[in-house]
Amino acid sequence: MSRILLFGGTGQLGLEFMGMAHDSGHTFFAPNRQLCDIIDQRSVTAVMHEYRPDWVINCAAWTRVDDVEGNPDAAFAINAFGARVVASAAREVGAAVCQVSTDFVFDGSLGRPLTEWDSTNPLSVYGKSKLAGEHEVLGIAERALIVRTAWLFGMQGPNFIRTILQKAFDGGREAGGEQKVAQLSVVSDQYGSPTWTRHLAPVILTLLSRGVWGTYHVVNSGRASWHDVARRAVRAAGLDAEVKAVGTGEYPVRAQRPQFSVLDTAALRLLGEPELPRWEDAVDSYVAQVMAARATATGGGGGIPAWMTGNGGSGAGAVVAKSGGEQGGS
Ligand SMILES: NC(=O)c1ccc[n+]([C@@H]2O[C@H](COP(=O)([O-])OP(=O)(O)OC[C@H]3O[C@@H](n4cnc5c(N)ncnc54)[C@H](OP(=O)(O)O)[C@@H]3O)[C@@H](O)[C@H]2O)c1
Image 1 (tube, rainbow, N blue to C red):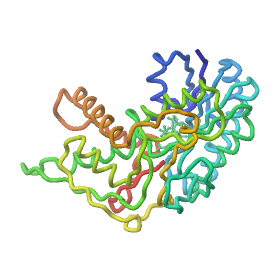
Image 2 (image 1 turned 90 degrees about the vertical axis):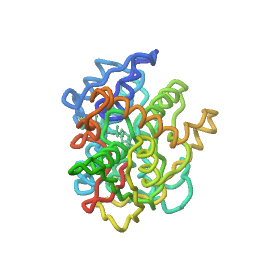
Image 3 (image 1 turned 90 degrees about the horizontal axis):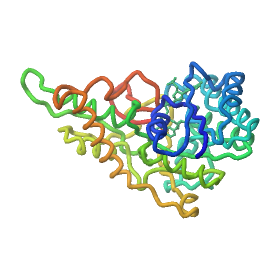
Image 4 (image 1 turned 180 degrees about the vertical axis):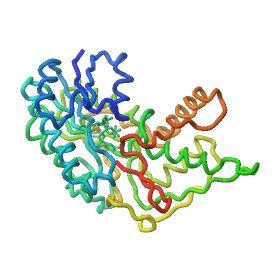
């Protein structure tokens, strides 16, 4: 059993860890941002010395890719300097650090799945700040694990799938007694690795338990475009919606995304760990759980409640372009 200090415990991945804490055999401590802001060196050091963890998992980040683009100083403060503060304090107490990172460290120009040994070249402020965070942790922590993941969806957070389901539901609502078919436009020329936090979190704990360090890609298997994900989610939810494929150029957003940032989990394979389930199965299971939670919350009928999208919360959830097209963050 290990003592784990978790930063970002209120985010969608952090909440996944909290949900499995009881059965994991480990003890978790997750101070919220009010108690411990990761850019506040004094409070991070105090928490570290008080809790004396074996492992630190840093899920804290500013993840709203388009907002981040206009605020590089704030982005680097949290995603890079915050990682430095966490790694420095962990070093003082001899704790290992897992820094969660992103496929947005790549430019996605190679057109093939990217291994841990491919060159990084982030296109966005978000990607640059997250890459700087990786370097901080690798340079400071005595034992550093970088886990790059992508296109996350979790039960609690705002994310691309929740936004798509909400839009499909709203767009198909009866108007004047007439049932409409929702019309959605979703970007189809960006490819990545959609990943369920339910499948990701246990692998991070396995890597920490095995005492392996360095950089690992951890994502669900297969590859998908945002359009593929939207179509799969709508079908899994049994919603009647027309999901139109559109090009990135048709819906300009602030931050440039990699065109093809599918992650190859090469290091995980070399370690002999099993591949994660296919993204299609992950989406189906995830949507089934979201719909079941919705049925419970509404007594089997009624509208999708506000928590369905969690709009207004934090997270790298779906980015809704002004003109109505959909593409996500990472
Ligand atoms: N979402 C994705 O698609 C995606 C893809 C690839 C990689 N990642 C990475 O995976 C990790 C988890 O992502 P997520 O989607 O779970 O993120 P999220 O839902 O946006 O949650 C971010 C968390 O960070 C906390 N936080 C932000 N600034 C902080 C600060 N200064 N001090 C302390 N805590 C702070 C937030 O606290 P509050 O609740 O108080 O705001 C929240 O708990 C991040 O490192 C992200 O970069 C995400």
